Amino acid sequence: MIERVENLGDHRLFGVLIDDLNIFIKTTRSDIKEKDTVSISPQWEQAHWFERYTGKRI
View 1: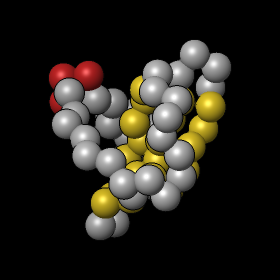
View 2 (view 1 turned 90 degrees about the vertical axis):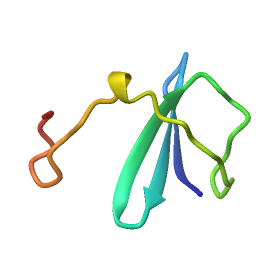
View 3 (view 1 turned 135 degrees about the vertical axis):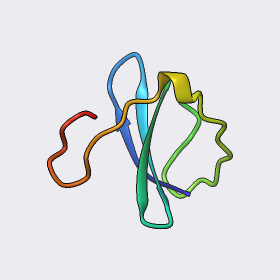
């Protein structure tokens, strides 16, 4: 379920909570809103990973 939506001009960030993992999805879609349920198929080669406590990119 979409927990958070941030409009950043030409794209949006959607925050999704899966178990205890926060995932942010960057997209150009504008039809998704908070509390929507979505299916995702990550493109892992384009993923960015961050350390949970420091926020630094891994």
